[in-house]
Image 1 (cartoon, rainbow, N blue to C red):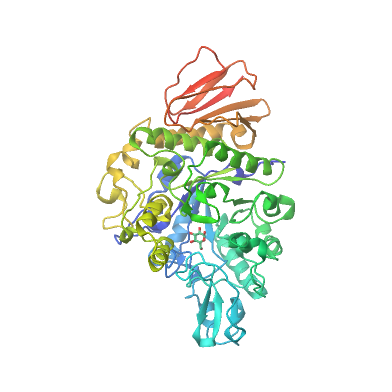
Image 2 (image 1 turned 90 degrees about the vertical axis):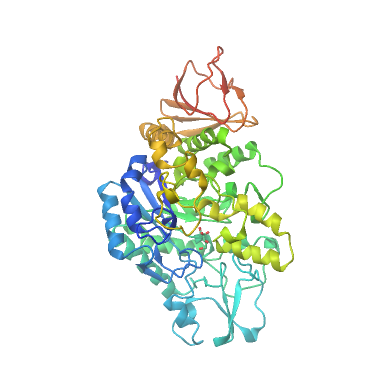
Length: 561
Ligand code: GLC
């Protein structure tokens, strides 16, 4: 159990290339920009970079619609830039994980251009088609479609094609062995270049029932669970392992919407030879309406629920498999705004407290660029500021239905993916040092108020420097990576307390989730002495050593003796 691996000990730093650093002056980040910032990334202490898609794409969904899996998007640079980036990373001991987006391609991929030409084209079966003479296909729901339908009628061949995402993202037909072979070849191409792994986009959706039956009753209202429950999903993942993954020392993390605890080990139990890790969506659903991943729920979420999610997922991988811990990514709003509190007085502690959580849990930690400096949601209140297809299309739907557009924008201030995609805040110069020209997406103005790298570099108490100390702490103590997790005082409404134990080492982590002071008395564990290793605020010493008082959003890591 829990044998040591680099991808378990590594800390992942996610870069959304479009928003990281522009060097060409077109308002869009690029590969040279990442190269320029490699020393900074290394200085954080992180080990692995996960790069969102950098392949040629018409950018209907910012690179998640790929037109050529073996070429670099010209806006981002060239293959030579990519090779330099990889070499620069290797020279610094950093690993690179790419995004593998193979549930669908772009409609501008040559395969699809061929596929739609005729019913007898050799590429026809690379995609899912429904001949119109059979009538209207059974309802399939789409994430990004203004009509809400995942079937798009295509006149040329009088047939509908399937697209779980936008109509420019047709789903690939994994039932076709030629498609699977193409994908394996693409994976080998990148591994042979020296790439260290893949984050696999909506990998739980790849297998479909080619009879496209009416949605079974038990999935009514919940397409996601149906999509993630395809009949041959595990056969395909195992085959991918046999054909490709097992031949390289690489890491894999699947994005797995719709996968609950009951099916978790099917993906990551090492004996099954499929994936190393996946991202579950239980936390991402916590503040959303049921089965409505983009709609904020009315009732505020409760700390008890947050603890329950992490405790049960920790237990799922206690003996087999391995977890991944994340609080945000390019699809979900900024962690400090969502799980903490980004108002001026609480921002510093909330951002660092949440970092403490991610870096003291069992499982591989994932951070989104800017999380190390506490970047916040931008909360645009004008639809013209939004760039994400998801927000724009849902806006069109509400408008068409005569819905409440003000309420929609209010929701997007918390929910929109653009909150997580604003340009990296490097310094106090114009556009936060991201670009010399107007960026593709507005920069958050709070870069002038302390949320930028340059200012935080100079302050030993900054969110950035706390992050570095915390990373070092995790590196110094394998107990924080591998140690058993025990939840303490599950019902406490304001403090999340847990211990991590490995061999002789025992740590106590206290996380205040309240904007006022809070207190906890830990009678249930025995210790003589608690040595403070790190905190984001001053410690309030208590005479009675089993009682701890926390300031608003304070985090403390103790070693217990
Ligand atoms: C994943 C990606 C998201 C993208 C979608 C379609 O959820 O993370 O950004 O829009 O898949 O590829």
